[in-house]
Image (tube, rainbow, N blue to C red; front, side):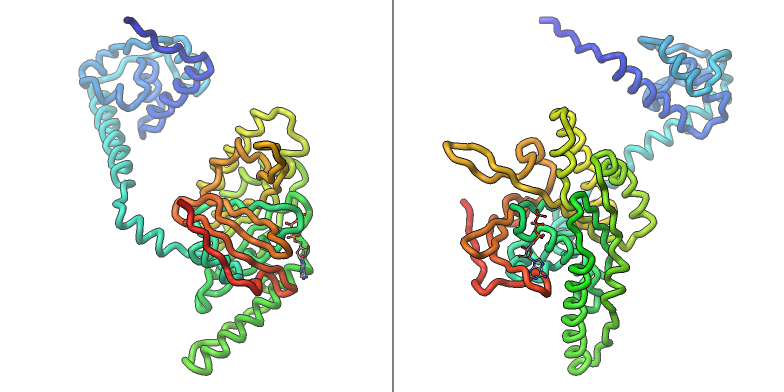
Length: 387
Ligand SMILES: Nc1ncnc2c1ncn2[C@@H]1O[C@H](COP(=O)(O)OP(=O)(O)OP(=O)(O)O)[C@@H](O)[C@H]1O
């Protein structure tokens, strides 16, 4: 049976063509030699490295399926296509550089490999941000993991914003006190961030640190940490976004912002889906845009070793004959985060449940929201082992 390859759409063809032109374009050659090379049809490094210097010098054209389109890309890239004659010397130089670039490319890929033992150590030594609730920290393996995207969802009033504020304060706990000594980015889409509440939680955090460092100073001659609640507020970078376009623009800008503020160790989005649920009509496109956004957050988390916390609303969904709570955009969005924590009420008590994690067992723990922030509830945590 003869199978025919699926024909790429003109747009895809043009994009891949432009990408391969970029490969030749990146070689450190003079513009005139580069122009000759591309106009002879040698665009990607593998095609250049596979010919002899004499073939290249003779200006042997590669069989290119759509040279006219190549020429239009070349013209667009301001490359001269008038003269395709390459001298022997130029051919030799081109081959040398192309071979070097090919080798560097594969070497960097091989260098990227890690062994599983190193990965295990890396995982164990990953810093975590405490939630100020030791029961919750326990089920989270010590706190919110840096280098991961964690989604926290729950009904209105369950305490999502309180957790977001608590984390943006706690990320600043100095290293001497077992913290990260970092800064926070708070992206507020709903207008729920209250600065007075952040000050209240910061004051409680400073009091706890003074108590801890006072004890350490008295018994172990350790330095006392001087930190004021005002310092904590100064280290929370607050962004208010009022539409999904602003949200997309901000997320695209974050990499630059964090490169300039490398101390940022947590990014909180409160909430991730708010504008997309309200104003977005095209559901398929909405899923694509949100998945792309989640991918960008994952890249940021890995690149800058920071925690991304996406707060999310829940909706009711009719399933198996009854209404059940489901995270907003649940099904379409479900693969976009590494960890997912669901907050829920059990009687009068607030509970957190690990719904998804590649490394933690499913478990639940109770917590309470006090005037000082998140704390353990009076009842002890409950671990539910899943099959
Ligand atoms: N100063 C405080 N002292 C004690 N509890 C507080 C204080 N401030 C807030 N809370 C508790 O936190 C709850 C509000 O939590 P939060 O605003 O984080 O909910 P949420 O899940 O973000 O809700 P929404 O989805 O509506 O934004 C209040 O109902 C109250 O129980």
